[in-house]
Image (cartoon, rainbow, N blue to C red; front, side):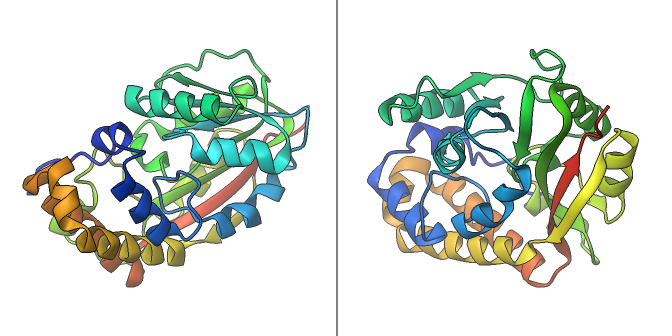
Length: 269
């Protein structure tokens, strides 16, 4: 079984290093500071479904480096609150927002997404969680908490990048989950949990191709800069992450693990 390997702490700690900046640009094309399988093209296509505008307030769960939250605020004019369990991620995001002059409109705080959120009922006009739902084993309660903090008639967008859609070995699952706690579910489970949480499913889309594309680019961009990354990560972490990205690319290219986007709505009272 592969050992756990850190993708997040060291990445956020060195986020502005030139080598990581070059890798993001090569991986994503347009770098908005993402650390997932998200590309700007996909984000711009899905964001209108949340119907955000100036005066609206969005919550991003697992906000990471803060780049996508800043992009969201600029694209729609809305305010954004980002929460993340990783202290380094919150610190990086806060610094990025302040450096961009958006500290008053885009704010970040540390929070455990599986615990009750420190927001009143109906606080937000939209909620986003990109490629992090797989880290929440208590998924039904997470969805119910999202429903609580959303205003009636408003929507949430989330992606699950590890929906089981084909045969996968235990070794492959171990490699795919080597960066942290993962919950793998077959197709149909998320749909059932969405309904149980009191949401209405508005749209469901297979976006696996993005994960296959990004993971392949990420692996190649890192391999081309191995010497620089070894100085930041060390050999064990570098090789562990390369095996992780290779596993993601193989499983998504073969559609044995799929990445699915869901848009859900809290029914109007």
